[in-house]
Amino acid sequence: MERLKFIGKRLIYLVVMLLGVATLVFILTKMIPGDPTVANLSQRALNDPEIVAAFRAKYGLDKPIIVQYFMYIGNLLHLDLGTSIRTNNAVLAELMRCYPATIELAVFAIIIAAVFGILFGVISAVKRNSIIDQVVRALSVTGVSLPSFWFALLVLYFFYYKLKIMPGPGRLANAFSAPANVTGLYVIDSLLEGNIPKMLDALKHLILPGTVLAAFTMGLITRTTRSNLLDVMSTDYIRTARAKGLSRVSLILHHALGNALIPVLTVIGLGLGNLLGGMVLVETIFNWPGVGQFAYESVMSNDFPSIIGVALLIALNYMVINTVVDILYGVIDPRVRCQ
Image 1 (cartoon, one colour):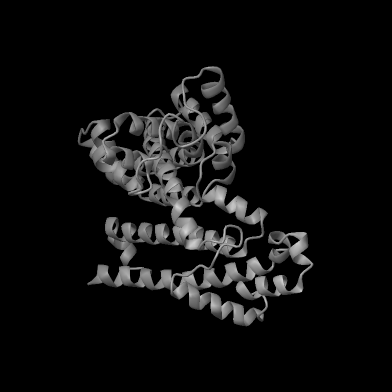
Image 2 (image 1 turned 30 degrees about the horizontal axis):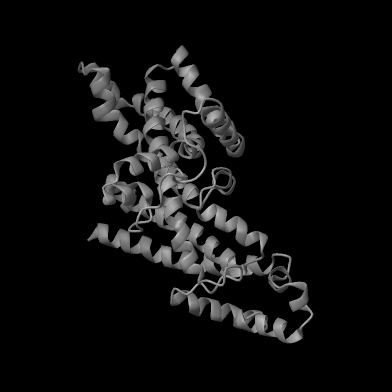
C-alpha cells in the first residue's frame, strides 16, 4: 500500500508538471520573433489579403492569445498537436515518423555510456591515485568537455573518410532499402525480416553517432560512479566486512556497488532524456532523420505547431524518465518512500 501511494503521488506530480510545461511552452513559442505567415507564404501570396487571412484562420493565428491557449490545451487533451505549417501534415504523425530513429540512436548511446561509464568508474575507484585512475579521469573529463559537433566531424574524418573502416552518414547503406516499418527501429525491423546483413549494417551505422553521443554521458557516469563508490568504501559496514576477510571483489560487487549506483540512476536518466530530445548538430552531421533534425527544420521555417510539439515531446521525455527514476529509487531504497 505504501509503495502504491508513493507511485500514485509521483504520477499526480507528472500530470501537474505536464500542464505547467505545456503552458510555458505555449508562452515561449508566442514570444519567438517572426511571423509564421511571412515565413511560410510566398511574396506573391503575401500580397493577397484573402490568402493571408485564410492562412491565419487555418492555424488560429487570427484569434486572441487567450483563445489560442484554450484551443491549444483542448487539442492536447485529445492528443492533437495541430498541423505542421511546413509540411501540412499532422505534427503527431511527423513526430511518430522521426522519433523511432532518435530512440534507436539514444538507447544505443545510453547503453554504451552506462556499461563503459560504470566499468571505468569502478576501475578508477579500485585503482585510486594510480596511473590507471589518472588516465580514466582524464578520459572522463575529455568526454564531458568535447563539443559534440567537433567530435562528430573528427570521427567521421578518421574512421569513415581516411581509414574507411566504418560506414558514413545515414541509417543504412545505399545497397539496402529501409526495412518494413514495424517498430521504426531499423536493427529490430531488419531482424524481424530475417535479413541479418541489413541488421548488421544498421548496427554499424549506429556506432559512430552513438559513440559521439555517449561520450558526454559516459564521462559523467564514470565520475559519479567513482565518487560514490569511494564514499561507500569508506563506510563502517564496508570496514567491518573487510575485517571479516572478504575479498575486494566480493566487497565491491556484493556490498558496495549496489549502494554506489543509486545516484548513477539519476545521471543515466538525465542522459537518456537529453539524448531522446534529439541532438540537433550530431543528427545533422550524420544525416540522421530524428527529432533533432526535425526541430531544426521547424525552427528555421517558424513552424510554431511543430516547435511546440517537439518541445512538449522533449519535456515529456524528461518528466517520464525522472518519474521512473523516482519510482525505482523507492523500490531500491525504502527510505525514499517515506519522504
